[in-house]
Image (cartoon, rainbow, N blue to C red; front, side, top):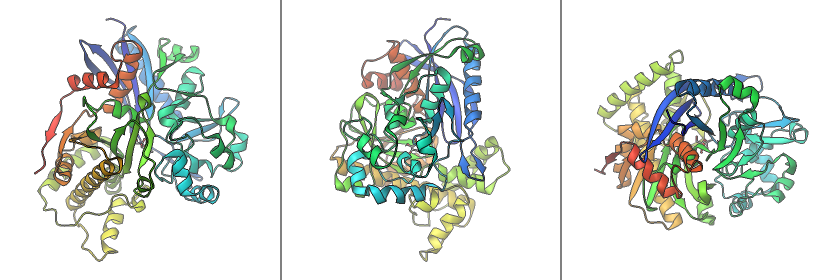
Length: 473
Ligand code: LRH
């Protein structure tokens, strides 16, 4: 084979994957080489990511990729969920990174707001209030923070372990709450007021920056000194790169564990209305803004299944979900929708019980059977998606003609149709692997295989993936 293959490492909150990609006659051909679970670990001091296991899987996945197409891989890019990080001192990781669903953040919010109010915070960083934003997590670190000399977000941390280079890629840095919404530089004044040592914030780089080759010891285990490229390392940033639309009059729903619902804009919307509606302005690839709202997403389904079948394997749960979804399509939608964004649904645990309590505490009849609960989750998610789309369009004064659903949720027929029905807009579903595709296309652009504009990359996606259309009924 020919050199020119790129590799995406895409780490989601429930699983990770390693995917190979090659551009052939303007089409992106993909091949999955590894998939692994990302199961959190609960210890005495809280809920953590199993970071060493993730790193081990990444290195093994890259080795498997190299064996699959020996000598053909040119580069690798890593993306993951936002906001989470590790602290370092002298190149050593200090403690096991926390999971953003850990309960510690509540105290962090109070500590930050005591110094910088919610209004000022939004004016500076443009982020929606989420208790797990890095800036709140850092306020719970206590004596660890002055002891640290580096803060690295998850993809930057893995890049550091792979290459020895410590940087902060901008799209993910924008989820910390410490990046200026307009400047897209570290807000050092804010950091100072929150006692966050300036020196721990790494130099910022943009997606499309080459970090250099794998360190020697890693290259030995992988079988080759691949080049590491910083991609849109926030998964949502990579997913939005892969929206198969040639224009700008679309809304997107990047639907995995979360449903990220919004618009791509040229500049942030920092109005008081946007703050009160809890909209966020995340930094996108090529300086664009993702103006969006976090909706609870497929988490409600995956966590319900975990509650119902704690002993089942991933495969068993996904086949059970398939059965429940087809049953859910047949049950009448009797229950009114519930507010999926209620903070009661953020932490891990008994989601179905909490849903039923949500109805009971309002004097309404809760859904009874598993199929009814699943139906209720789907309808409620679709309503929240539709509401967020119309709210985004209104707040940004932006015309939209279509909603693109990308990610795992784009395969959920019931959810896509319900979203079309409740929004009154055409829905185009796909690609499922938008995040990995956006990751790979930024690498392909570095190689000069595609581009130069995001619209050129999106045209490749549109040619490379089957899309399904849902019309409102
Ligand atoms: C989606 C996501 C989202 C963040 C959350 C922590 O995977 O990156 O954009 O808010 O994880």
